[in-house]
Structures are given as structure tokens and as C-alpha cells.
Amino acid sequence: MFDGIYFEFPKIAFVIFFFIACETLCKMKLPSIYFPHASQFMKSNIATSKLLFFLKWIGIVMLILALMSPVKDEPYELTPKQGHEIALILDASQSMEARGFDMNDPMATRFDVVKKIVRDFIQKRKSDNIGLVVFGVYSFIASPLTYDEHILSRIVSQLQIGMAGKYTALYEALAQGVNLLKISKAKSKVAILLTDGYSTPQVDKIPLDVAIDLAKKEGVKVYPIGIGGPNEYNRAVLVKIAKETGGVAFGASSADELKAVYAKIDALEKSDIKNETFTYLKYYYFYPLFIGLISLMLYIYLRNKRGSA
Image (cartoon, rainbow, N blue to C red; front, side, top):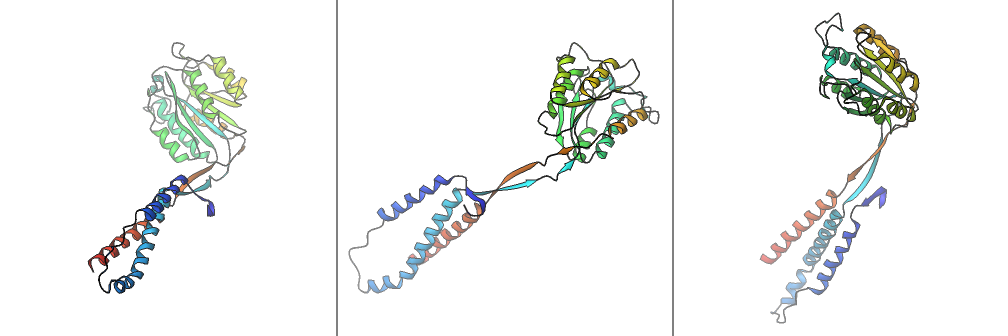
């Protein structure tokens, strides 16, 4: 079609042959008896007959074109950006209800403090493609990778303690974070894993070594963060995850220390991310539909006017 326009249902065009056949074979027979001066009357209506014929066929053709659904693919691209593709993996288990993590706001839970710091981190990483995984007994993707820091920040603010269960499936959460980054083509894939506890063996369905192997296979660098007292989380496991994936393990016993950790991670090296190209269908059926309906309405009006004259 011209200018990139094509029909979704081109075979509907064959319907035109039905109307042509009907026009040829189904004509009304002319009356065999003519009244005096009938020929003069018929000549005076030749112009009207031609107009009716034209309007009828314009209406039929335009309606058939509308049914064929003319469309055009309209491509568009997101603005290219430089940055990482990051999976934020947040522990939302019951232990995150502990208070006193922020000395400036002792009544705030750990999870409240974490959400605030993570939102600040997201706002600083405007060139990154960031996704979100939340875990407890099970893990789920709360947000796919997105450049829109405002939407992601809003999602973080709405997270609740215990929304994924009260225990800690740490290794399953790591595997879910890797899965989030699996389709990425970026050179730099980063997972920031935050927890305040140990893995609960009864609910963690994926072994640690399997989760680490998945991260290594997909080229995901993991930065584990343990928050709380030194005995509240398994530092040895976090160090192992970081060492084998090329990341760094951190510990934070207060809100200020956690801010410093995210500030260090914020200094990560930039890398190229390819443009995202999308297409959407732009429909043009309403143009022939409008012309067809107007033509048929004029046809009916003129024919009725002619018949009553």
C-alpha cells in the first residue's frame, strides 16, 4: 500500500464481486407498457440516476475498504540512555518490623527506612534501567525493568512488611533477581540484594550454589547488603555471593551506614544500554467508513425524494 499503509483483512475485497453480480443479474425489469411522454420523463431523470449510481457504488466500495481495516505501523524509540540495568532485591520478611535502625526516627521500622533510602537511590540513578524484586517466604517481581524512576519510586513506597510471607527465601530471591535481568542485553547487570536475616531452609527452594551459578551464567554482579546487628544476618553467605559474582558485600547497622552503602554503589561504572524500539498500529478505517456512510445516506435521501416526486 502507499506510504506504508496496508490492509489487515485484504481478502474481504472479494466481497465486491458479490455486489457486481447482484448489479448485473438482479436488475428490475423495465415495465413493458409505457405511458405517453414517459421517455421524456425518463430522460429528465438520467442525471439523477447517474448520481444515484455513483453514490451507491462509492458507499459500497468505501464500506468494503473500511472492513478491510487499513492500518500503518508507527515505530517509535525510547531515548537512548547510559547506565546499568539493576535489580533491587528487597527483604520484606517479618523481621523487617524491628525498630531503632534510624536514630533520628526510632519508631520507624527497618523496612520504612530501607524504602526511603532505596527511593533516594532510585532518584539518583536516572540513566539506569531498574527493576524490583520483593521476597519473604516467596519472591516476586514487583516491577519489571523501567527507566521511569517516578513510577518505580511509587511502587517502593507502597510495599508492605509480610506481603511475601514472614520467613526468608534468600537464595530464591537472588535467582528471581537474576531472572529479571536475564533478557537484558546490557554489558553491566547488577543485583543489589538487601536482607536482615538468614535463609530459612524450610522455605528456600533453591540451593545457594545454584543461585550463584545462575548469576554467574547471566553475568550479574551481586552487591549483597546485610542490615542490623552482625549476628542478625549471615555475613559469610553474603561475602560468598559477592566474591563469586564479582560484587562487594556490605553491612549496615544503622540508617546512616545504609545510606553510605548505597552511595558507594551509586559510584558504579556506566555502560551502554540499547534503545528500545516499539511499534503500534495506527488505524485508518474510519475515513472510508465516514465517506461510505455519507454516500449511502445521500443515496437513500435522493432515491426517496425521486420516488415521491
